[in-house]
Image (cartoon, rainbow, N blue to C red; front, side, top):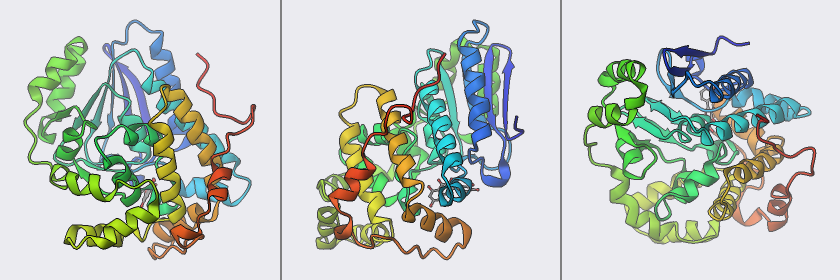
Length: 349
Ligand code: QUE
């Protein structure tokens, strides 16, 4: 049981409301378990016609997972870290496969674990406050929670760009590349939610009517450069292309990219290559769980959480320290599927 998320039925709408404002609604294992139980129950309940996912108070939407707790476990036997990822990915998968329409309200910060619960929704509402990112390479993780699936399906090389640089997108950017379906000013959200509760069957038209044409999306102005400079399969070649480009944009991007974990970046590139070929989201979650089991006990993740979130010195000492030092052998180990009995499995319904 947890007070950090509200799960309730309001009329014909099942509501999931993140309520952990002191941690920007970052997901804990009990929060994932509570949402999983609720969505599983609503699945078989004809009285629930729509699922509405938002944050209940304070700034939103969701900063990710409780990576401090995950890293603490990773320093020991890793059992709690594995339990967290297993449950979180079951939630991601149950939302993804939900036959009932879901509305996610991506108002405010939407990072990492927040992306994993927002993007499975059929209707994904961005606002002028949306700040979307997959920043895991900053802390020695990689874009999980279905990140391989979503990022590998974005236009051109935008997915690789987002995964490697942790670039932040605006709400307008999110709509422009299909991550969000509607752009609705945040001052209309209360009225939109009230309308959804009153007539959930009309969700599509309620959202269409409330949406406005988004402002210009900066990502579209950058896309040609992204597609060209992130075209290579190898991290070393992407860095070389950025170094050889004399635009201010490329200089800024490569400076940021060089602060990320080289191991995380190489995991991300290989994951996106493999995920693009998958046809089943369950296969994605099984593959990512295998990666997470390996990565959550490795140096870079423990060091990244220390440097960015605990000591906040923002000076992680990555190991391997350079892209060249990340061998195919170490990647092969990390990408080795888990044996039967340890592998991820969807919630049995
Ligand atoms: C990269 C990340 C995360 C991050 C910062 C990064 C992440 C995450 C959080 C986070 C932020 C605030 C909290 C919290 C967690 O920050 O995944 O509990 O209160 O969850 O650079 O991947």
